[in-house]
Length: 138
Image (cartoon, rainbow, N blue to C red; front, side, top):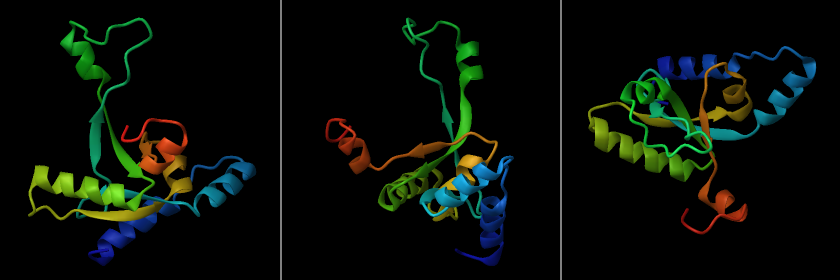
C-alpha cells in the first residue's frame, strides 16, 4: 500500500458485509480466506472497466441501434484470481493512463468482493480455465 489513506479505504471496503443470513456470514468468512487482486487508483478504489452483456440467444450482436448498445454498457471492476494476471493488467492500465497515474494492485478477500451490492467480474487464472477444459491460450 502506498499510504495509510489507501489502506483505510481498502480495509473499509473489505470489512463491509451485506450478509443477511447467518449461513451467508459463514460462507463469506470462508471465501474471505481466498485473495483476489484488483488494480486500484491512488484512493484505493478499484478501476472500473466498461463491459457489455453478451447478445441474447438468436441475436447477431451487430445491432443497428447505437443508443441501446450504449445503455447496455456497464462499468465494473475486475478482480483477478492470479496476482500475475493482475500485474499484467496494471501494466496495461499504466500504458493507457500514463505512468504519472498512481495505480497499484491490492488483494481483496473474495467473500467481501462477492458480498458487495455492486457488480464485478472475477477473472479466473489461465491455468484454472485450461484445467476446466478450455483450449490453451484461450
